[in-house]
Length: 333
Image (tube, rainbow, N blue to C red; front, top):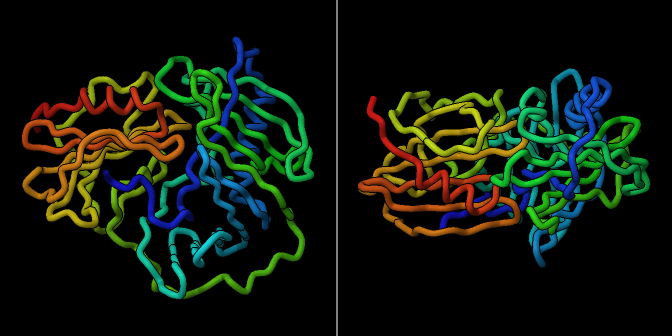
């Protein structure tokens, strides 16, 4: 089955967390302003901390360092388990290391990762989710406010976010299924906000890696832009059964690692979750594995449709990616 995420853990940070809720309380302007604070805090705050990512019996521990200065955003993400795994990002330039080797990694532009999970544009959230304030608790020694995002249908997950009460920085996130079971979660266990944070790792090297990626769920933000090896197109393909509220943010033709010809890639978002649809000519695809696989809240479903292989990758329940894949059709150009 196709890999959902880069072989390194480092770009696995995609998601949010959640708990079930009853009918949501009315959502006030103050609440919206606080969500905006949360959305910008991850980009504008200097911090260094250790967080745990967990789904099922799988646990990964990582350290993240983030600096915001006049040159933009700089981020270092290090795996603390096993072989050295490290990603250094300066704005849209990315360097990845596995052991002592510099290795390929999918481009990160447009991708949201913990703790930068909320979009800067929040208009879709209230349309697609019932948003409710929840408890105030301590996370990693900091006082937090929690918000629950409960979907208005059964085709997406519930998300729950705990943010630092002063800065708005997201400290914990969880995704729950319809039964309230945790599908995936992130949480800081140690964190320093502000102060004298080491900056010696920030690089000015221009040789950032920008390879052809495998299937990835990487451009959900409405601000994502195509790269030089991607072409914006109107392919003639359409999806008839997207969940209500998902809007197309991009349609491109792009190369993929291991594929002989470029594939068509349609990208949709509801403000929190994303769905990517990949369509490739079977003649250019030596691999034809079909079926469903998952990693935490990310589902991947592939099926053969005529002379094409359709693959749907989404931060949504399994039935949703299957429903989307079954509704992909060619309408002509």
